[in-house]
Every structure is written in structure tokens, then in C-alpha cells.
Length: 524
Image (cartoon, rainbow, N blue to C red; front, side):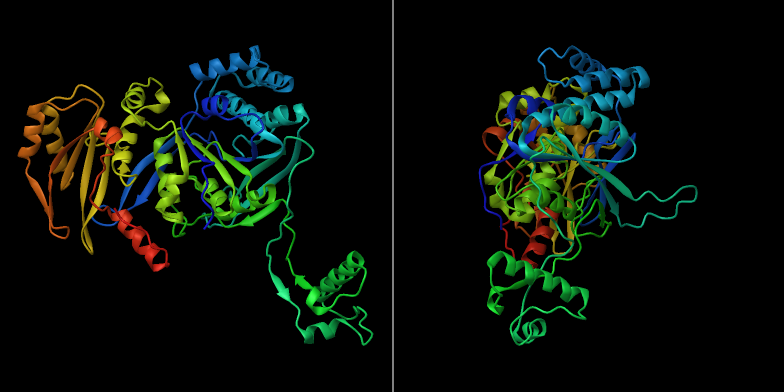
């Protein structure tokens, strides 16, 4: 397991604000981002659960951009360049794109990316690299943006990498099947880090019989009528002799049959629905893809940044490869998923080594989150409250209509092969006695055994009395009884560390899997 450090940071919030206020100049060795592609699609996040409801959908993000106040402000900031943040080529490019594209979705997207990539360029070390993962929807525009930022400041466009993901996607009748993404690699200077990679790497010790095959009686290297594999070995021995000035002995040599040199076309599998890595995140990338990038452009101990960390593939791979890391995301669902992923992969102790920023830790910050007016953060308070109280084990409800009052669901074990449901509702203000009756009705109509009301305000005495009247649920396996309707305040969550105590289905399944693999974890 990778060594735990206190250098790893997970930020919750707008990455532009975080980059500008909290990440210092030239402190990052490698940045990879996989931002939304402006493909005008809604991605739905699917979670697999055990029991009566196999799947529940939650919208991870809406990949749609509009020309709004944020886009207008960003455009004005780039053109004014009051603080000298932007390169002249970028400013002229944005002006030109405004004239060509007009004030619409695509320009709003490109301005958003230009602002953020400018900050990424600033925080990269002189030897640092930037990898931008995109698809053909806007890749040609994004390359222009990166050229304006990096090449306009003594940086370098290094490679265009094609990830050919080897997954079956059905038959395309009117066009060639779409099976690749583009990854642009830029460096901040001409002096960048790069480690040569091969498709396969292994070491093979030469035994005495094989040694005799490559040498004559005078111990001179021979190379006649040999397969290419053995000819490569001869070239290796000759190089060894040139460097060391003498013929090698068997104990001196280890033959490295490295395989084929990695080029700019990466034939690597995507994540199929049955992949063990799959977490249900809509745009999740395979760990092998990030491992290749991180190995190529960083070394152990280097700092890795992912400003759109999503489900946390970059930070999980960085942790495995003994790199330090910084992750950022604007949705608490992603932050929750990253924490759960790291816990499952490295054990619960990993959470103590991560510096969390932007997540409410007291009533003041919780109230601030509840009262944010940013439309992009709508319902973030509810998501944070549900996921925090359940230790990231609940499922956020994004559905509209009849069950819109339910903010989240979770499943708890009632036996070895059965479970039951808990529903959650969050109130940021204006709680009243009638909320309990409404929650009781939602619990019954949704087929839930338990319900929890999380409230920013303190509940009234009549609310507490009505909740008690709902009765208790007897958990036969646990030998414990729980109030069918519970009221939990945000104060209790942030100041007293109050958390849901019932073992969830997801954590029981995860624990069983880890135990089967020989890695014990403790269940709370």
C-alpha cells in the first residue's frame, strides 16, 4: 500500500476559485483533466445496490453550457486582462471566436476552459506537463485555446494522443463507429519530464544454458541466425560492454525484454458494464489510462492535479503510484464518491491523511452552503447533508415528480440475503409540524422502513412528538430498535459528529469483497 502523507488535498467547490485562491505558482508536476465535453447530453449516474431496488439514478452533472452571467463576466475578464493573467494570443483568439461563434453555448464552454487552463498553466512547475482529455465535439477549439496559453508563453505542444477504447458499441449504419477520445499533451517549457514506456515490462534472469547460447569459447558475444528476441539481447550485451569496458559475466546481466514502445495511439480497453473498476460514474476512465499518463510524466513523490476529479480515478492511481495529489470537484456527489473509493481501495485510515477543503465543518459554513445563490450549486446543501450523515453511503435522488420530496435513499441489511430502505429529506429552513406528516406519507408510498429528516433549524416540540408517534422498527439481526422517523439537525452532524449507525448494504458487500481478497476493513 502506498505510504500515507498529509500532502493530499481534496477540494469541494468551483475549481477556478480554488486554483486562484489556494494553489500556489509552480507547485504541480502534472495535471490531467477530463472536463465535460459540451456534448449537450445529460449523464445519469447508476448505482448498483443489493435488495428490492437494484438501481437508482442520480444526475452527476448536466453537460450543457449557456451564455449567462458567468460567461459574460469571463469574456470581459479575458479582454480586459487587468491583472495580466492572459497571454496576448489567447485574448486575440477569444475575440476571434466571439466574432465567429457568437454568444452561445460553445463560446461559453470555451471561455470557461480558457479561464481554468490559464490557472493550470500558472500552477505547473517549469518541468510540468498538462494532459487535456476531450472528444471531437470541441477538441479542435480546445487545442487552439491550449496553443494560445502554453505556446504563447514558451511552452510546447508535445503530442496528440488517440485513446482507442476497445469496447463494443453496437453497429453504426450511417457512419464509422465512434471509438476514440483525444488527449492533448502540453508542457510548460521545453525541459519537461518524460519516462519512456513499453506495452509490457518484465525482467528475465539469464541462466547458464542460455548464456552459452550467446557466447563462443573465447567468451565473445555472437549473433548469427538468431530470432529477433535474441538479437535484441545481443544488442543489450554489446551496449553493456561499451558502458562497462569488459565482457559481461552471467551474474552481471539481467535481460529486459520490454515489449513495444508506447506511441501516440493507445489501444486500451474502456470500462465495460461488468468491470470491477466501474463505480457507476458516467464518464469514468480506466485506471490503466491514468497509470500510463502518470508514469510517463511524473516520478514518485511528484504532485498530481486533477481539477475535474469526478469519481477520483486520477487521485486513486496517483495514491497507488506513490505520488502526492490534489483533486477538485464542484459537486458533493463526486467528493463523496472519491472518499468512498479511496476508503474501499486503501482502507479507512486513508481518510485521515486527506486534507478536505470547502466541506462544511461548522454551522457557519453549513449555513453558507445552504444559502448559496449559484444555480450550479442548486441542491448541493441537501446532497452534502445526506451523504455526510450516511458516511457517503446513501444514493442522491435526482428524480422529479411524485418523489421530489425525497432527497436521498439508502439500503440497510436485515439479514444475509435481504435488506430494507431508508429515505432522507433535508430542510434548510421553515420547518414545521406538517413536514413530519409529509415525510411519513413519503416513507409509506416509497416502501421504506425508516425515514430521516435532516434540518438546519432546530425542530419544534410538536415535530419531535409526531415523529415519535410513528413508532419503532425492530431490527431482528442487530437486536436493536430504531425510531421509524428520526429528526437530525445539521448542528448535530457538524458539531457532534452524529452519523447513521445502521450497517448499509453497500458497505457490507464491499467488506465481504475486501475480506475475500485478504484485505480486512472494520465496519462501523
